[in-house]
Length: 240
Image (cartoon, rainbow, N blue to C red; front, side):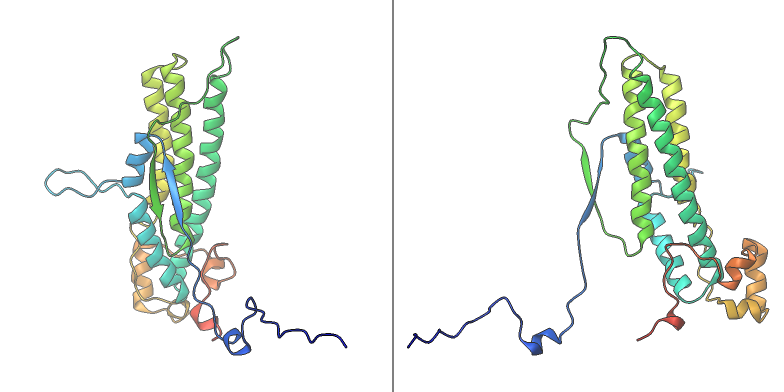
């Protein structure tokens, strides 16, 4: 007769009742590392200063906030919000590609000197910025700044070792920064109006007023056949 096996306790297996409970929402951590003051200034932007005549320069945090408002409106079937998300999506990707090409060109300058190896400079004390956004567009804005930061490092290295002049470096840094700021400015004039595609189809007065200041979205956007690849689900189409 064999000895009876002891009862097994599989502590790693949840009970059936516990398995019916839904897990909590996912939460992760993200951070961005910056090594140049130029990229840090673009990230921070500038608030409007009353009496100084200096306009607001939209930074990453403000851009992410404006895009969050547009995201919420797009959930409610606002075609202007959908149009904004679409334009921002394409502008971010196009300008990231442009900055990547410019960075490669700047790094290529560091390889032209025979028998001299030049590494792209790195900050002795880079800064880390925690990122926590409720839509993908805040993170996409951070990716754009990161690309500009790498471009700035290559330009500043080339200037330091005498391969380009200070004036040339500053001009190129300004052009690169403009590629970021122009994207961040896209949602500057957008405001929540409580419009839907039904408002457009019904030819409401409010829809006509918005069209006077912001123009009509393309027909494909009005129809809802074209939306940003990163667009929220329409609330009316979301199942419980």
